[in-house]
Structure formats: structure tokens, C-alpha cells
Amino acid sequence: MADQHAQTGENSRLTEIPAIRWEEPPEGPVLVLLDQTRLPAEEVELVCTDASALVEAIRSLAVRGAPLLGIAGAYGVALAAARGFDVEDAAAALAGARPTAVNLAVGVRRAHAAYRAELGKGGDDRQAAEAALAAARRLHREDAEASARMAELGLALLDELVPGGGHRILTHCNTGSLVSGGEGTAFAVALAAHRAGRLRRLWVDETRPLLQGARLTAYEAARSGMAYTLLTDNAAGSLFAAGEVDAVLIGADRIAADGSVANKVGSYPLAVLARYHHVPFIVVAPVTTVDPDTPDGAAIEVEERPGFEVTEITSPQVTMAGAGGGIPVAPLGTQAYNPAFDVTPPELVTAIVTEKGAVSPVTAEALAELCDRSRQV
Ligand code: MRU
Image 1 (cartoon, rainbow, N blue to C red):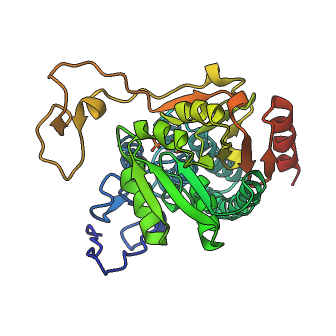
Image 2 (cartoon, rainbow, N blue to C red; image 1 turned 135 degrees about the vertical axis):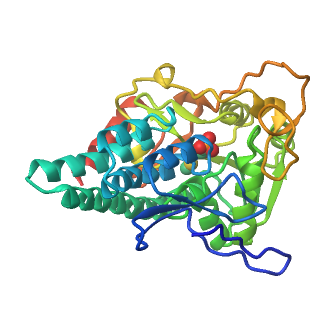
């Protein structure tokens, strides 16, 4: 399967390449990803024939965002099983590819458990591989359903917290269909507001250093016909001060049992700003992002990314020059602090919206009850 380039140009509609899909050509099953490192300039597919290619795609952020990482992890186990690789090794490598988004480990665990259960029942390798694939497909479907429900609940909450419609929403990183089996988490809420005619503006943080906001959220907002404006991350303060933000909507990579929220670095400063300016700070995430085994924010492992992502502008579209392959923007040898995520304490979060309901105020008890309820249905 060769690289597929979409048409671009002012009037052309962009193609509808899904973020992830399973295919079974005669040469054997493959997992096809939309390479997110190449967006928005080109829509290029990345074809993974084994789990190690998928691990690399996860590390390079070709595939990214918490819910999609879960789906990818599950398909990765199915791929290893279907192609006769060592499933135990593949599952361990996939689960450890990135540490913060708990969905990745959850997705891997689900497909791996289905695989093992089938073997435990006396099934052969082929049946076990089919069971892993069925588990991955189920997770993919459930995530799409969760996404639709979060959009509904999130919009209802937004209307309640910010009466009068005409919402001006600030978002950070990328949380739309590129990270989901459906239309995403926080972005899906903004999209629902747009469709209902109640989105005045989506403020899109560019999201340094890898520009998930500028490259991906702006791409999704443009495709959806939303009124959106891109800003540098550090312009958010003056936007709040000018009274231009009605609500902040973000996703999450992991929510600890106490309600601490790990999300893309830069989320915590937004929460502080939102509190100072009396603006609701709303987190939208499926229940699979809530991790009862992580007691609090301090227990969340925050991924440290390579320094060159900060000291260089890296993108396949720029001339290759620096040690990381990008254009240097700092003197050679400069050290960089580059955590991929930060942690917002629960007291700064107005509400957490999941597909099973919203929690506000955010307390350990309310979250535990929500998780219990979701296990019962
Ligand atoms: O490093 P990334 O691009 O994988 O980070 C993604 C985020 O931080 C998203 O905001 C988060 O996964 C929520 S996506 C619904």
C-alpha cells in the first residue's frame, strides 16, 4: 500500500482518511494509520505490519491522543497475534511505548486478556487472534459511542454553566476525530456546540512544542467549518483578561483517583488562568482515562520528551539541519525541559465529563462512584 496523498487546495474537500483502520489484504493483516506527524500539509498513510512498527509510530506521535492510543494498542496485540509474533512481548512493548496515557495500557490489556482467555478455553492460535481482534474492534466501537455521549453531556453542561449560548471556547492540544474512534472528547463538545449554532469561536492554543493545536486542531476545525482562531500558548492570558473566553475545554491522558488530570503540557497554566478569571475549566474524557490505580497527581508518570523538540523546529516539511533533524532555534548544546504533560489538581477542575455522566465538583468519592456505575452497566 503506497503513501496516499490527499488533494489539497483552496476549494478541494480533504479526503476522509480515518485515524486508524484494520485491513486484511492478501499479504496478511495490517494496521493503517493516518500519519499525524505529516498533517496538515499532507495526508499520508502509515502501514504497520507488526507491533514494533506500531510502537515506533506511537513514540513518534504518528498515532497519538489518549483514546486512540488505547485503540491502537488493542489492534497492535491483534496484529501480533494474527501474524504469529510473540504476543506477550508485543503486549509489553506496546503498553510501555508511552507512559502517561493510561488508555494505551488499558487497550493492550483488553485485547491481551481476550487472546489469553481464548487460549485458556482451548482455542487455537487463530481463534485467539480472532478474539483479540474482536476485543480491539469492540473498544474502537465503544470509543465512538462514548464520544457521541460525551458531546451530548458536555454541551448540556456548557449551556448550564455559560447560559446565553454563543460560546467562546478555548482548547489546548488536539482532541477531535484524530484521537478517537468517534469525534473525540473536548473537540466533540465544541463540534456539538457548532452544529447547534451555539459556538461563537473556538480559540485554539498552538500547543508547543509539537503544535498539535496548530497542525491538528486547526485542521479539524477548518474541515468542520467552525469559527476558530489560533493563538500562541502564551497569548491565552491576555485573551482571558480581555473577557474573550467563556469556558476552557480540554481532554485528558490520565485522571487519577483523586481527580488530578494529566493532559498536554500547558493545560495546568490554563486552569490557573481560568480560576483567576472565574471561567469554567472542563475536562472531557472517557471513563477508560480514569485510573483508580493511580491515587493522585504525584503518582502520574509524566513523559519526558527529547530536548530537540524544543531547541529545534521539527517537521517533515522543514529543511533538515539540527541534531533532531529540524531547524535549530537555540544555540547548539542548549538543554531543554520538555515534559509532554502537566497535572492539574482537582480543585482547579470545574467538571469532568465522561460518557457515563459528569462529576462536579471533582472529588475522589464522586469519581469512584462514577467508575463503579460504569462497571455495573
Ligand atoms: O502527546 P499527545 O499529542 O499524545 O498528547 C495528547 C493530549 O494531551 C490530548 O489532549 C489527550 O490525549 C486527550 S485526547 C482526547
